[in-house]
Image 1 (cartoon, helix red, strand yellow):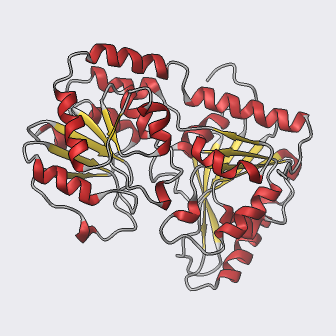
Image 2 (cartoon, rainbow, N blue to C red; image 1 turned 120 degrees about the vertical axis):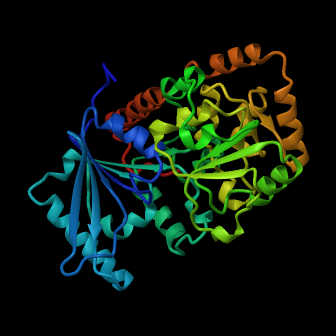
Image 3 (cartoon, rainbow, N blue to C red; image 1 turned 90 degrees about the vertical axis):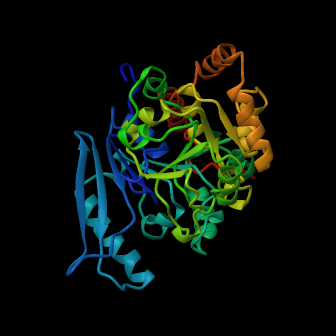
Length: 382
């Protein structure tokens, strides 16, 4: 990360709905890079385990990146939660000049306790349509409108989301999922698989990521039933759904959550990768990071017709698009008999050549600096 242009503020605080240690994804990729030229603080949602007074726990992850977790007493009403968080932030910001700070939001819900502050720059990185997710708070839509009105600049997690939001702000830019190519390219060279996967015999068809309400359990169940000789590897935490509803075929293997560093090792043993998301409100605007990651590992991919996968990956025939179980099986069987794999991989590498989290970071930073230089404060679309 040499020759990076510096952040225009000395410090950045990010308010996120995602735990830093949950799954390594867009926030972690970007903020570790911003921490190259600024002090970055990652402010998580509260944990309700304080015995007495509320407090903030600070956990350094590098010399310039710190994870902050608020600890509050259990049973507080929402108004008390907001006022307590505001008091904790008041103390955190005491004796500091907010004109040296950038506020970076992943969740509009944080505006309920940060609205009063006036930092030099407000960035909203809208990576998902959170209001469509299961258990989304009712006030999220209202708070997002307020955040759009306050933000100096808005980024979106893909082109579909950009199209849906572009009328709400005039200084808004799409940034689809990117890739750390060197990390995932390790899968092409690794020989030994991790122990819990190495003993699974047969063609391996895998998925990694969060298994939640977006995941098509029936599709997985039906593929496993119709093709018992195929081994389906599922890596990742199960959240927001009842684990008793998970298909339990003998050829479906739940290996649990793995670290980002471990993923290439698992990918090295796969013959095919899956993006088996349902088509519903929660997946309407997603841009799965795993798409370029699978491809960078050299693994063929079959996906349901998620808009940001169809365009560009499906249109360019880099990824198979399938809508039914039968189409998934047909696509997988076609890959198992493909004769031009080297040609396909060359096309994949050509497409991914100019895509990287480093490039995403640099382009975002240029837009941020341009916003400050042009004094585009609170630029709202008409």
